[in-house]
Each structure stands twice: as C-alpha cells, then as structure tokens.
Length: 331
Image 1 (cartoon, one colour):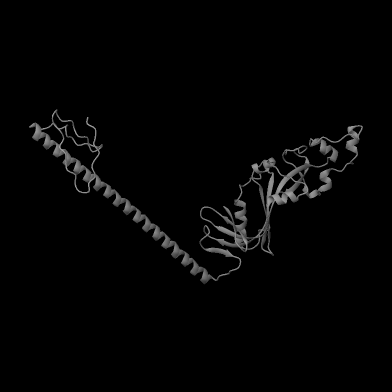
Image 2 (cartoon, one colour):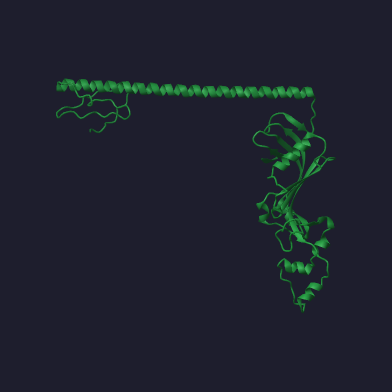
C-alpha cells in the first residue's frame, strides 16, 4: 500500500507491506505529475496499451552498506509483479521504472519511461513508408526521388549512439523489428517523477520497533528499553482483548439464560390457562374433556377451543399493569 500524506511543512510518502509490515516513510523533496512531464516532452509517447503489462523495475546503486538499502530495494521490487527474464515475451515490456539511489545526498530518484523499439539501418524516407505514414510526393517524379533525397542516414543512427543498439532475440511489435535484426531502444519519459529521502523504517504496520531512522541514532541500551516498552504495550493490548472476549461471552450467556427464563414463564402461564379452561369445561358439561381438546402447543400461539352450543368461554380479569391480549379467531 502506498500512502501520500501532506502536512503543513512537507509531503511524505509511506510504503506499507501488508499485513504485518515493515513500513517505510519517505520525505518527498520534489515531484512532477505525469501530465506535466508528458506536456513538456517534445515527442509525446503515451498509449493506454502500455499499462496492460507490468513495468520492468530497474534498481541502480542500492548495493552500498546498510541493511536499510537492501530492505528499500526489496520493497520497491515487490511493489510490482516479478518478471522472469528467461521466459518473458519482449513485446510485453512496454514500460520501465527506474529507482536510482545517490549515496552522497541519500536521495532516491524515481523515473518512469515508455519503451520504443526502432529498426536500425533504414533511411528516414524508407522508415516513414514502413511505418505506414503516407509521404508527400508532390515534388517527386518517382518514389526513388523521395527515398534518395534524404541521403542514407537513418533516424535511429542519427539520434542514438551504438550503446542503444541491440540484436532482438524475438520479433517485437512494430514495423521492421524482426528476430536477429539490429534495432535501437528508445526511452520516452511519461512520468511521474519523484525525488525522496528515506526517513524511517518501522517493523510493523506504522507501528512497532524503529529499525532505521535517518536523524535519530540510539544506543543498544535505548533500543532494549524501547523493545521492552513495545512488548509491554503488546501484552496489555492482548490482555484487554482477552477481557473483551470474556465479557462478550458472559453477556451472551446471560442473555440466553434470560430468554430461557422468559420462555419458561410463558409455558407455565399457558399451562395454567389450559388447566382453568379444562376445569371450566368440567364444571359446565359435567364430564372430563378430551385430552386433545385443551392440549398445550408451545410452538405456536394457543387458540381457545370451540365449546359445545350454549357455552361461552369464561372471561378472566386482567392483572394489574397487564395489557389485554388480542382476541384469537375461533376454529
């Protein structure tokens, strides 16, 4: 996770490795947005297809002394999917990301480029025809005149040096870029730009022991005291979490007992009502009622049974502070 934090005095850039850290904090000295970089370029090269594949990450000058350099380089590399150079399709490498470290100023420069491959050895006129651009032939009697007028210098030979010339091991998308043929690799900056300085490395996720600090240097005794303080805070946090879990379980258990007691009281009241109805039936009719007539049903609300003709249910007086029950339909 990458986080930018703008304070009143400075802009910071944090890189967090989820879920348990470490966390790297950088101070941003300079930055340029991608749109500003592209608009200032003489030859703008930008295509949405460039972002369909991960960039090639290049690390420069991160081999100095100090574990923080290795950790910083590993963090930058792991921010992007890894590329197997032995099996990669060269045509998918459309971007490269450069991280360069200056050991004197302790600054890290980040640059983002689009990669373009241009064939070498073609004349400018031939290259225009090969690339699909229709030339203006109004001043030429034949196509040969257009080809011969610019001489024999190719665009790649004129703009690039021999260090940018490579022999392609695979055929690359583009006119004239064939396997085992020489081509020139061009880089066009597409931004953004960042110039930053590593300030702090924390062991956890924005917390924990400080593994590196650019301004503060602590002795071993101070580091040991800080470790003990962090361990004490961790144990207190675990204790509070344990107490919260115990309180939650106790409240759930108490709630279940209360619900069970409420259901028991409702069952007793329903059983008492059934006994009263049975006794009333016996007094009025003069015989014992059937067992199924006043059978108690705990799964649904009990309905008063239908009595013989001429008999009515006994009206019961409501108790104090007791709401009247809704009349249920007779069967």
